[in-house]
Length: 72
Image 1 (tube, rainbow, N blue to C red):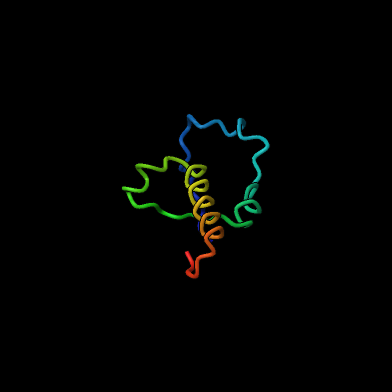
Image 2 (image 1 turned 90 degrees about the horizontal axis):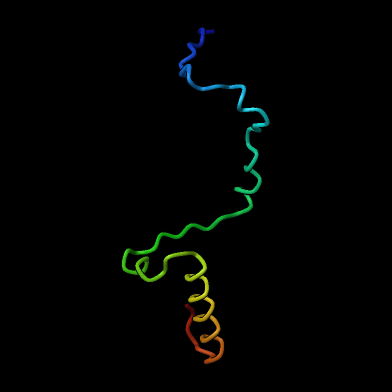
């Protein structure tokens, strides 16, 4: 087995890293996240996830009200 060389810079104080847990957020990440990239012209209008979700929910609601025969 090769001997590992410590390449960590001396200015890093490992004693300050108390309480770190590897994989602490892994379960949350596995729960499911949908990431969708917006085209640049769309991203200019929708600056955050809340505005995108609001617009899509409005579209869904309008689609249901009109009882359209097509899917979004």
